[in-house]
Length: 263
Image (cartoon, rainbow, N blue to C red; front, side, top):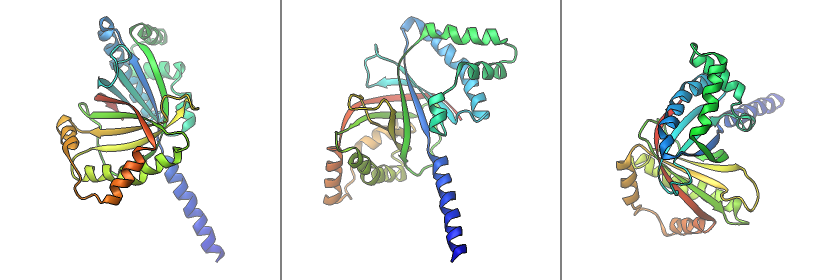
């Protein structure tokens, strides 16, 4: 009996470690770029791609995306979104410090001195304005093997759970809506879906509490998904969907195209 309990304990600890390793933490950064600074900004992004690749190789981060906004926001607010992926909340909050960027910059560009890399990083601030930064934890996602490539389309849906219905909203996303997205993926109408919970900011004044990432391989798949109607859903399922919709307020929907993904 004692051996069985020990084996069970080891199994539970192993499963806990696996789940912890699967949890991802994402930092969204929304950039505003003036039209006359677009070239300089894109040049900076291209410079940073190699730096993020070096950070991935050093296991400092898990990945990095660069998205251009297609619709959903006033162009005067921001036009680009970057997402940096981390494996734990502490790494997410620490982020990549200036020393890290310089170190990885010198690895990526061995012909540059420390001062040259630092000057390159500092000069980039003149070509862009960080309009907003959001720290998020992935709490649910579909089962798929979708590969993020240039041209991938995403709908970033920012939600705010109705006060007093935080748990109800998350339950609805996981138990009602995620199976719907999984079914669409299996029918070839979607690439990937995930639910993110906002880590910061907290409080009732926060503009959003959650975000869903709806990923499509291209516009054709996106529009086919919009026209799809599930005729097989039961009256009970439709009632559950309606109840779930009432547990949150959809604040904004941003449609964006992936310009580059570093993994």
